[in-house]
Length: 111
Image (cartoon, rainbow, N blue to C red):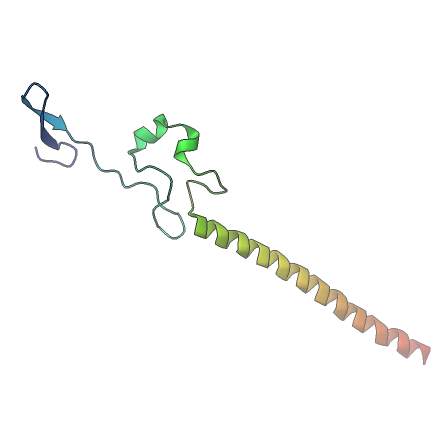
């Protein structure tokens, strides 16, 4: 029957005969988990064929390689950095405010 997994095409052999060749399904390939774009540097294969590949061929040598695209990883790193910076700024402002509150108390006691 003409189903998705049962496709064939005619192929001419060197001997001149026409034979049926089973056509494999087209693979979609991995995509980024955040933005959904196709991942560069990773072949588009069927799941069983990925298992036969070496680990270095299945992913990109980077943090989140094989799972997220470079743009999304960059955004994650920048976001994490900015959040940490924001925490530091809050802490410094809190220390300044507490220092400002302590100074008037000491001067009022001296009077």
